[in-house]
Image 1 (cartoon, rainbow, N blue to C red):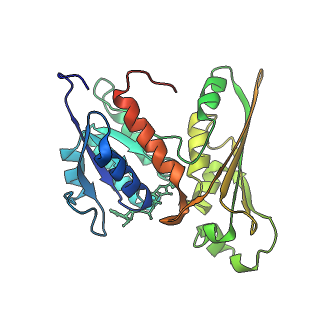
Image 2 (cartoon, rainbow, N blue to C red):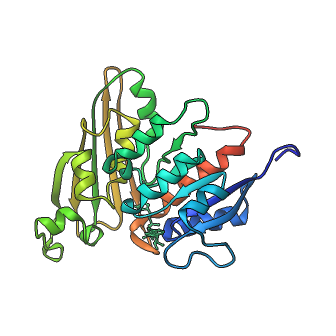
Length: 267
Ligand SMILES: NC(=O)c1ccc[n+]([C@@H]2O[C@H](COP(=O)([O-])OP(=O)(O)OC[C@H]3O[C@@H](n4cnc5c(N)ncnc54)[C@H](O)[C@@H]3O)[C@@H](O)[C@H]2O)c1
């Protein structure tokens, strides 16, 4: 960091598996950043003030969202209105609650700060963004997890699916990313990220598979353009702190934070 570079204050909303991993990385040291506040219903982190969403937005230059999707709208409203930098790991909240992007687009362009959606548990976003410039014809993601990873998802509850009875690889869902975000809000952040980077939620096809043999969570993307076809598969072991989550997602936020002051940025 140079002498005239001001320290940016960082706040984390949600100090569960991902929020805590990101907090540890900032406390260990990320050039030019200081973790000053957190906001969590369940106590937060030792030694860091645990404050309301209002205070988080007011006091921090950068706010990192690591909440369950349904808790995101009130935070997003405060951060966008305060015109602070906003990093969102629950990309599916942008599909589930379109009012967030409506508010963002209503802010004056000259003072508006971007909403940053990290790549999360996904790989290949760089290629998809480049492919989009030439036109994407089709975009699909197939996500596979052990059955327990889908426990409590609205689609599972609504259709009375007994996850304990799944004894071979089974397709649970096929539809577009908007439908997937409603049925599996905690599991389809990757589909939301793909649609935001690619051809939008309505045209992004999503398949969700439960596999009792799966050791972790796998995401396979196939994106076709006129001149290129991109396939990417990533397998992530579940985060021990939250089996529904992924360690890579936390580190994708850390990588975004490091880029803020890096002298060479590879995207
Ligand atoms: N983009 C991706 O690829 C990706 C990957 C994994 C997880 N995620 C998403 O990241 C988010 C966080 O994941 P996690 O594993 O850390 O979850 P987690 O359940 O471990 O942590 C969530 C935290 O939010 C807190 N919380 C809940 N409601 C709150 C409220 N109203 N106000 C303040 N705090 C509240 C909880 O107390 C908990 O500490 C989830 O939405 C998850 O779907 C995204």
